Amino acid sequence: MFNRLNLVLFCLVYHSGNTSISVRGKNGVNVTLTCESEVNNIVHTELFSESEEIDVCQDEECSVRVFKEGNCDVVIKNLSFSDAGKYYLHVYYTNDQTELKRLIRTYHLHIHDEITVKTGEELKMSVLLSNADKVEKSSSGEWREVWKRDHGVWSNRLMDTDGNLIIKSFLDRDAGTYRVLDTEGEILITLTVTESGTESKDKLSFTDKDKTEDTEQQTKWIVPVVVCLVILAVNVISVIIWRHQHRGHTQVPVQENTEPPHIL
Image 1 (tube, rainbow, N blue to C red):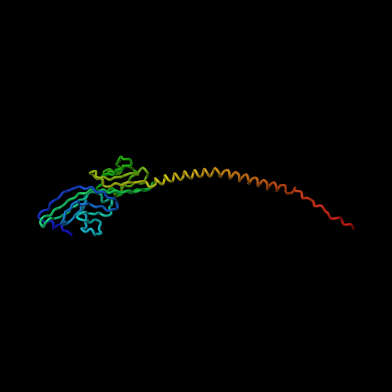
Image 2 (cartoon, rainbow, N blue to C red):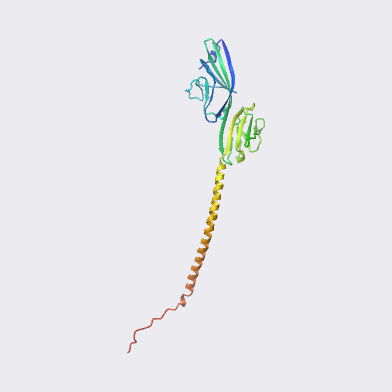
């Protein structure tokens, strides 16, 4: 590991350029901070956020989260919203044994993501970073502020808790795009929120309509059949009752005796 003290051994340190680079990355994937330089004889690479120095493994074969790749690029693995913000890359290199130079790159890392939420569920957005100044929401192209650092939330349906912006019970009107801005107006996070129940509701409405139509069609032929069965049953019962009432009045024919009378 390069020791900072070794830098003092060089006679002079030259500062080479300070270019701001915008970088966009997706939540949960990797992003590369390219140094965009062909410098050789690199002695050391350092990466700083706005609040701290970040350990950078100098070997791209490392399994750590931040490592140097290629000549002087730096890779950040498995991005999270908390990674959004400014970064400063210092690349120390030399052309001979007496002169040390430093290449400086400034990055603004903007992280985006998309999520779906069911109606009525709680939506927790971990977007209230320490460098966040405000959160805006747009569903029709017009941005509206929903949270401000010095004010908090602008609606009683929202909560600001432990760095999370929470919608207590998600409604379809809460769907849209949310963006988090820093004090300079730079975008830190863009989060697109959609309602997962919208398509299902459409399908459900269509299904219910079909069921209603099917029921109406069934009613058209079931009612006549039931009426016929009732009439038939009444007729059968009437016949049975009539036979039962007239059973005692039925005349049985008398057989004629064809044998001659016996003479005593």
